[in-house]
Amino acid sequence: MRNFKFTVAYDGADYYGWQLQPGKPTIQGALTEILRRIAQEAIVVHGAGRTDAGVHALGQVANFRTHSALGAAELQRACNALLPPTIRIVGAEEVGPDFHARWCALAKTYRYRLYRGRVVPPALWRYVLHYPFPLDEAAMAAAAARFVGAHDFASFAASTGSEEDDRERSAVREIFSAQLARDATGEELHFTVRGKSFLRHMVRKMIGTLLDVGRGKLPVGDIDRLFDLRDRSKSGPTVPPQGLWMLAVEYAEPWRIAGS
Image (tube, rainbow, N blue to C red; front, top):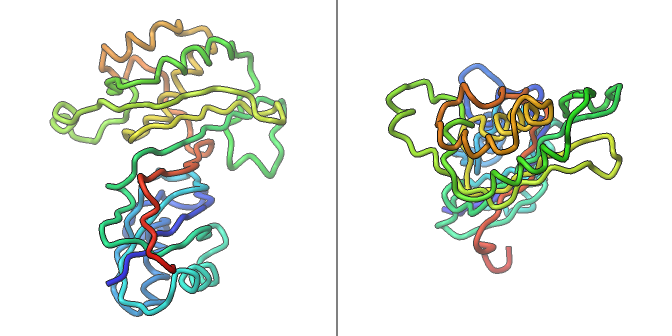
């Protein structure tokens, strides 16, 4: 049984997220269907993260095991020929048997895109949140820096749907970097965050809270208070998904098989 690692990019606007859902189009579902057609066997695709409905990716990572004799480049070409154009395999390699896209990940980087111009270009509206109103961007950047470190992010996460699970799960996550800056065009404000792992809707709640800071509704220092409160009703709103991008997933070693 061989193990392959795919790097996947996708436009998530028309999908119900990464994870398989019966009767609904998902990224994992599309990959699984195509790989089963190519390999002519039951294949299970594991992803590094479960992006929500409407969220996009440039560097999602997946792995799967197969008896197929096809090489990584052949699997990549076959998948890209059969997948819809909204999903592309941008990298493929054979890896060792112990590699798992989710459990071996050391860090993930996400970016949320805010379009600050007066009118959103038609080609961008599916990929940004339009916010042309006044914001104190310096205060937002100062607040973003307070996310760095190991904190209890319960105030910045959506419920699991079970009060018991919410009470018992650990919401402590470590953020390695968090930056807010204009892009090269000056039209977009980007929140880029890198961490070990993330809770459900965590990045979208973080940017919603930063918007409250930018609007003057929340002082910069209240970020620390929100960590202590562990109350999601006290943080900012969960912003829409279309501005969120999964940029990259990092691993400790290449995991490559010699000659692949």
